Amino acid sequence: MQKFIRLLSLCLLMFSTVVFSVAGYTHIAIPDEITTVRERELKNSKVFQFSVAENVKTTGTDTAKNAEDNYELNVSLFKIIPLRKTRVTVGNRRYVSLGGNVFGVKIFSSGVLVISVEDIETEKGTENPGRKAGIRSGDIIKKIGKKEVNSNREVSEICKKSNGKAMDFTIERNGKTLTLRLQTVKEKQSGDFKAGLWVRDSTAGIGTMTFFDRETGIFASLGHAICDIDTGITLPIHEGVAVGAKILGISRGTDTDAGELTGAFTAGEIGKLYMNSVCGVYGRLDSFDCDAPLIPVATTGEVKTGKAQILCTVDETGSQYYDVEITKIIDEKSEQKNMTVKITDERLLEITGGIVQGMSGTPLIQNGMLAGAITHVFIGTPKEGYAIFAENMLSAADKAERLMLREKAS
Image 1: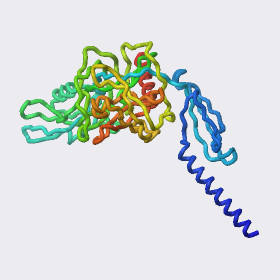
Image 2 (image 1 turned 90 degrees about the vertical axis):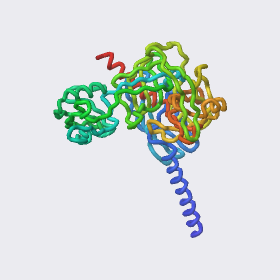
Image 3 (image 1 turned 180 degrees about the vertical axis):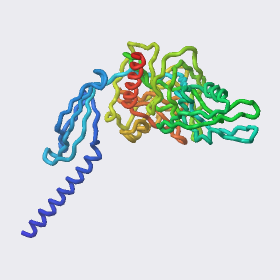
């Protein structure tokens, strides 16, 4: 009898261990939230069983293309032991048209960005009114007094006409709005009143278009924000345009140099920019191919490690497909740097050495679907870099579309 009890206890212990191990694995393998499309169904396995716990259907977020259903799913072991619950969002499969072409970006910021505060030589000696007022590098000046400012010239003219009077500077710092009191001083050499602020109001560069919506003309590009080269601050858009661009040459990536596509803007604007975000730069094309081929956008859960391709332009022949490998899925919840990608195509490695500046936004295709876009190169390892999920860029593109519609309505 005692042997039987010991054997039973051992079996129960082993069973409990297995159950707890499976439960622990379930919490790792099955996330708190699952995003899928109507064409994909969550299928039961021999071990895990799914059952709808509570249907909480919602209406579409904006339009029919964004309509979603949300429900709670019970996950159980052999239909007997409950393991956990997960939230499932089911949406319509989205389709876009691929980019892969280089283009130019010109951004005029909303407000002016403070690059540094500098000393001014006056009749009384060296003074630094910017530092004295508490203004820092990285601050964005939105107003001086009651006047909004969006250019270096406006800031300079207001300071010249101040006649040494103290003025309220409304600034944005780390998402917060502050009002700082600054008193200009008279520069000894020029005789002008100055604030001692080095500011920037615009930037320009080239990148790669990821995709566009052939119904609205909304496009997505870069996969990361355009930031000021000195401060690293994301530049808010006051006005921005997309322009044509052509590649003039390539600086190949090496272990010590990231490399870059060198290009020039071509005449004429091709679109308007609406948003500069952590997920990239978004706008609307002035003209686009309404019959351009469509490609399905992969959901986050559909992107896997393994073989893939990119579509990019590195010379005058136009966009070409090149082989790559998705080596790791890093963070499904992050807005960017969701995976790592390695260039495996010898043709591209011969031309560029790997991922170079200007390739940001290059579309990443896997299993016939748009999986994401190249965003950054690894310093010291130009063959490898980061990529963002296409689903994240599509969500950002929807925000840009709302901005466009809001502007048209106003």
